[in-house]
Length: 227
Ligand SMILES: [Mg+2]
Image (cartoon, rainbow, N blue to C red):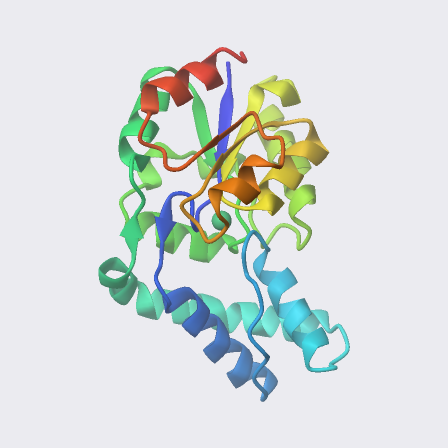
């Protein structure tokens, strides 16, 4: 048996500029001050908020972080119809989800999005049916992305799937996805459909690095051969 833990943004979908816009609005409304632009890629939502606070010389404040998350969740629900038109599914995603499903690969997510927002994004693009979210891990579970690997593995085990870490695959678009896989002894496929270029990703040492997910047969064969 093998399991795939999908990253969402830049891997399954792109949400255009909407994600950043919602984030900026929520932060500014709750904190009363805007933060300078920073890289979001592969970071968890609470981590991004914490880094924004640091950037404006504010002390770390869990209650404030929770309040920004709460605002983020209500804004995401409100803007879901806009995301459906401004965002897009990435090439090869649905055929690959289908190919893994046919091959008996268990599929869930490992994402920096808080759980509620991950669900909105997956639902907007019709991907929920492919994924068992009860065995996934989210930005709402922990701010430190590598810690999400241990949480997902624990949930896989609790669901009766006695997977070795080497049978668990992360598919993601950023160096942080690879770092999470590496820390947890998982395997990793990196895809250059986010903002990090192919050559930077290819130098990290993942099991595979691809420009997009269109070669479903090759990727499914790689993942199923690990089990
Ligand atoms: Mg990503």
